[in-house]
Length: 44
Image 1: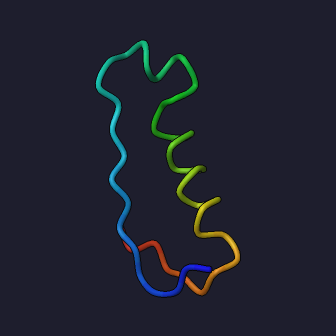
Image 2: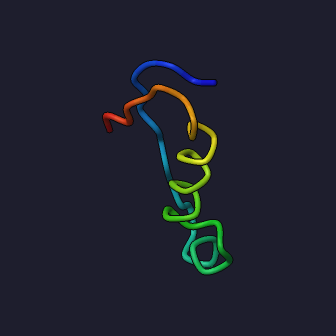
């Protein structure tokens, strides 16, 4: 379980990557899913 404050780095290198389901929103959900259940704060 993650505790603390976190900064995530999200990036899409090519437009096709974003269209393939690996875009910024999918990455954001993955980070939030990883931290889910912990006492965390995503600060940036």
